Amino acid sequence: MSNSLFLLEAFLLFVAPGPTNALLMAGAVKREQATKLLAAQACGYGIAAAFWLLSRPLMPTDAIQILKFVAVGWLSVLGLRLMASNPIEESGDVSGRRHGLSVLATTALNPKAFIYCLAMVPMDGGPEKLGIFWLALVGITAITGSLWVLLGKRLRGGRRVADKVAGAALLGFALLLLRPLLIAAAI
Image (cartoon, rainbow, N blue to C red):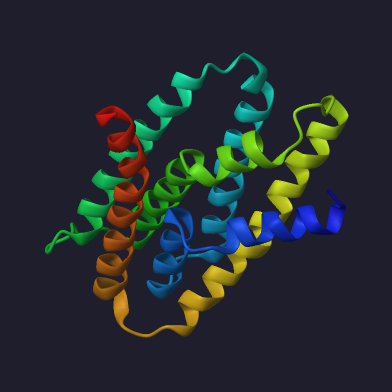
């Protein structure tokens, strides 16, 4: 696969709507500090990619299923919390920090990171190649995350609408993750 084709595929993977992008957009609508959100996203993807790239030779197939269940649980809890009719009002600093932590945790559990690391990055790459793929992931997600923040800044509707939309999106992504697991369990 050529480098430009790989970068295009990675860009399309990370620019697609997903849990992290929903939180970035909601944070921008609520006028959270974009740099904190993008830093939390970079840390989340950096942590997840480092873990997946380093441990993939040792990874049993069941571990991926377990991680999907953990991701489903996290996305469900976060989605329900965002959709709650009376969210707890906090000072701007505490709310911004909590939103940043939500972006970090959601990104670290984001299925896109393990799709990138386990399905797109060639298995025969040595440590120097894995480092380049790690840097590519962080760079691409910085670009795609910035696009979602810009989209959120352009939207109107306020905090409450942003929370409800992001919460519904997170629950939708949790259900999408859960569906193949339920089908596999039924067979």
